[in-house]
Image (cartoon, rainbow, N blue to C red; front, top):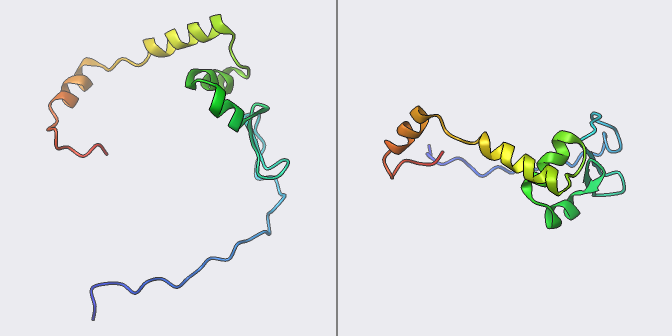
Length: 103
C-alpha cells in the first residue's frame, strides 16, 4: 500500500441553480447587479480601490458615506488612537524568538 494518495479526479459541476437568486440583503454591497460587478455603498469597488485610502473606505462602510477632509482627518486620528498594544502583549511579542512562524 502506498503512502501517497491518488490524485483526485473529482471535478465539481458548476451550479447555476441559484443564479439570480438573492442570498441576503445588505446596505453594504451589491454583487452582480449588472454582470460581474461589485459595489460598496453604491460606489464601484474598482473605483474605490484605485482612488481611495483604506480609512476612506472604512469610513464609507461604517458611516455610510465617504468622508470630507475634516472627517477623514478625525477618523484617521481615532483609528490611530485605538491601535496601541497593551504593555503585556508587547512584552510577550518581544519575547518570541525571531524564528517564530508569523501564523
